[in-house]
Each structure stands twice: as C-alpha cells, then as structure tokens.
Image 1 (cartoon, rainbow, N blue to C red):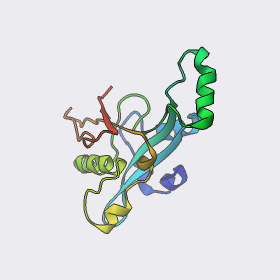
Image 2 (cartoon, rainbow, N blue to C red):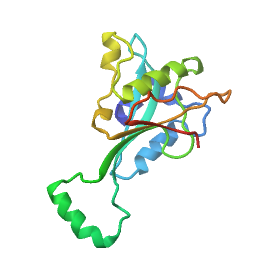
Image 3 (cartoon, rainbow, N blue to C red):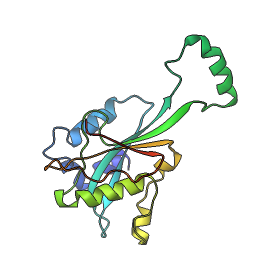
Image 4 (cartoon, rainbow, N blue to C red):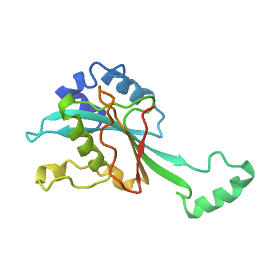
Length: 174
C-alpha cells in the first residue's frame, strides 16, 4: 500500500499505539527518507477484507562497491555500462529502519500476523484460499535480499522468524 492508501485505513490512526514509534514516526521517516528508498506498507486483512495490521517496509538498491578504492572507478564504470546492476543488490527491509521492530495489530494475533508477513515477503502461499493468495506482495519477487526483523512480544519471547530460505534473513532484536 502507498501512504495515501494506508492513511485511508481506519487502522492507521491506531497503528503501533503504545509504542514510542507509532504511526507518526513512520510518516516522518517516509517524509524525510532519501529518494533512493521506496517506502510502502503491507496490510494484513481479515476474511472480510478489513485491515487488521499494517507493517511498514522499504526497498533500496544498495551499491556493494560504494566504499571501494577510487582507482577502480573507471573499471567499475566500464562494467556498469555493459551490466548496469553489477554489484548492486535490491533489498526489502520489513519494519523499522532504526532500533527494534514491532508488529502492528492485536497482541493475540501477532504470531499469525508474523507468519502471514514472512510468507508474503518471500511469495510463499500459506493457505489455499483465493483471498489469501491475492494478499501476497509482488515486491519481494524483485529483491535480492529480504530482511525481516525478529519481533519480541511483551513477555520477551521471540516470535516467528522468517521462513528458512536463502534470500530471507532474520535479524536479531537491536
């Protein structure tokens, strides 16, 4: 979802309520983030199509050669004229860009939301219903790496790590 779409959802006004980084934080990040970032929102919907949770994410193309020796610049430029994405990696990051991540939504639904979110990020079907398959995002299909922060609930118990797949990495809580 885009920011305009998410702001039209009734859920957005109460997203991340009780957290230091509530929905206003994500609006500020989107307003001030570099133009190289694509900032969007996953919406987790119930059977009726109502949004029950919103999860911010962003996509960035990372230049893996940015910090290399400047003497290699000419060689890198030549290679990139032939192969424009040489040593560039598109990354989808789910959650907060700085600090710990949180899942939005009702506490008793967070584990299910985490499973839906992780499955959606890598394009895996988690159920056979037509409604669920329509909810999957196509963003991750075009990313080299998908980063999903491991969430912790109020009792300090870790929630669902991302599914075990080469392009999905779980990060520890910071």
